[in-house]
Length: 292
Image 1: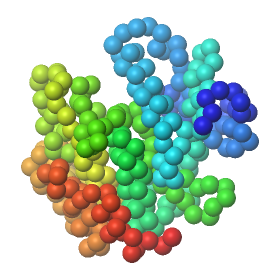
Image 2: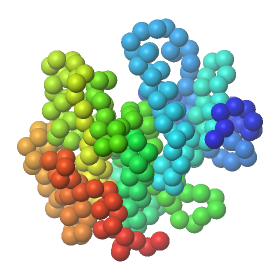
Image 3: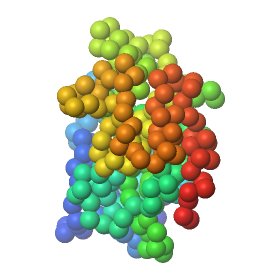
């Protein structure tokens, strides 16, 4: 991965706008004669030193440093970083859309892989992230991208967005000194309890969590992917009760008719972290169903 200007890079004035997030605008551009996604971050937004700006700077730096370490077919690859007077640019693999787009019915690109392959690829990407000593902390539908290379016929899923990721110990634990981060509807019960503690005391200096919270989130994502948008802990009263149902262990997997997929999701969303189905076991269970 290049961090200097040794390759040709460009964002033309008529570049296709792909989206806007909390920390930058994403365009389609080119890098080394390849179509890429370019995330442009306005440096001037962070010149003023305050707690919010410092936090954003740290998040951007963490995302960059963590993505530099990662090289896996099911993890979005950072190809190049460029900095000029006003902006920082992340050059990333160009994808067709997100699993969130697919679930919501707004996706019009090439279809994701078959169901077993899709679940396997998501589990494989997350297992690799964990093997590299990182916890993702924001596994959700909009952070899994659908990718199709110019040299392959098949599509592939890639985990993205490492702004909340953190290093872990050899046993997979990580500090919560910076607080609980991520998307609440994907929080495991232990993260929800810690989040409530954070809301009351504001300090989690001595608290730790572990990578099994990522597995819980991925289990919820599996269910949403297979059911086109449902959540295993939702009920007829609305999505706002998902956290309460997670804490009470009230889930419903009737939206999945395949017994194998149902057993995998149920294992991944177990209430007790140490009893959750590991990602190696998830991949092993899915292997007989793979089409590639």
